[in-house]
Length: 339
Image (cartoon, rainbow, N blue to C red; front, side, top):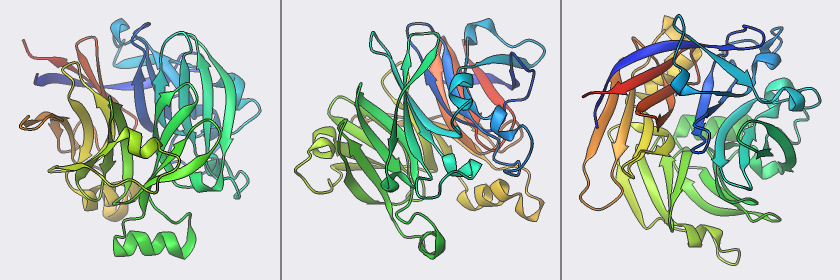
């Protein structure tokens, strides 16, 4: 399936009318049809009034369409934000009777306790509302980027780099070291499950295979899920690698069982765009459809040079539409199928 007719839309909080900026990740609830998203404004200074309030977890019905180029989204996280900082990054939804939403929470964005700069939040999800269930706090989550549920109380979490900050993090960035890794949580113990990944980013599971996006490695590494989950084993080795023409970000599945990857064809342009260095206002984006079986071709779903959306971080397919978001902008793309 190729897509066309991509329209940029703005997102606004249905209650306050405030813009929702910086959508990092998307998840679809197959039962309700709702799209859940995580967002916070990366461009605003941490002390900007209202920045924390606009950060959060939101939901909308894509079938309702856009009105006047805008989509009203409902804040699911108001109750949580009354007592805790919430700057959500990667998310994953486990639907069903024991519905869960798992969220990487970059609390350090609010100046929270630097000893626990990142947590994973577990929410119960009933198809309409979130209720906070548990906080997973561990210093090893300091570079948590994305996650995928293995069950109601089991997770795989990617860490994009090995160092938590300071000179170690700077050295990784400058020297291009592969400190990215995967952590496994079994409901009790958090352990290192894989390492040596060039900026571990998105992660997806299908059967006994786990797919990890290596953004700087412009590849997706394939692991046996059982190897990553084995509490008695050391870090797992990949059983395969898919080379890509762009650096993959978050991952999801399309209706034909292919991986959907938001991807960055020019990582230096992305770096300039994220920091608005040298007056850079755009960065190219791709959405790739990646066959995971041997011999399946790779296809472009969407390619943009930044005129409609820059730095795409997530893409999901639902109700005949492809939704694309970017963490460093104020728009989302809604694309429809060609006849």
